[in-house]
Length: 120
Image (cartoon, rainbow, N blue to C red; front, top):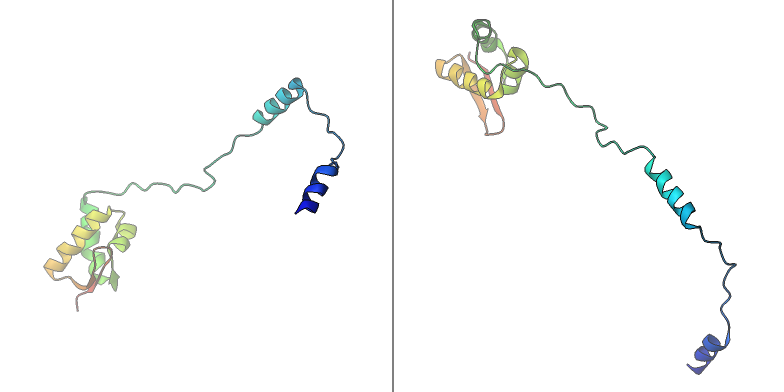
């Protein structure tokens, strides 16, 4: 233990050459140059265009629902949204209405996804 202390106390530390420090003016100029750089943009992803879905059926939409939907093999609310350009809640209500009328049959019902098929 005494050897370690002797080496530590007796030997001078070899440090590299002294680096010239910047003046206050140089530091201020560097700070201002950094502030002038481009600001970071956060929204790099493209935003999707919002669809204007109908919240109520018009005459044409109602006729298309009665004619097209009972002929589809797989009927889901999302499929109705794409075909008829309606709101999801309206599509769910339309599926329920067509089931009660007997035009389509329920295959699987879950609160996240409902699947129907045409009545045979």
